[in-house]
Length: 68
Image 1: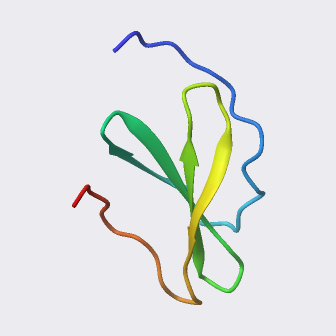
Image 2: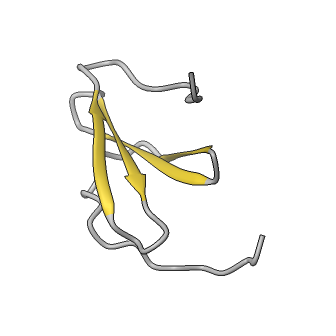
């Protein structure tokens, strides 16, 4: 909404696939891909802190995310 950009440190280097950004309840989640084609989902807090949320097996990823 504010169009403010903040640099996020702490995300791992990812394989050649593009990271995927997902948003739930105004919180940003970034999925990075590993070389084995698995993925890791990270939550990015407003202060830039990165928290690992979920690690997926090889050849799997998160397509959608939502609140239950």
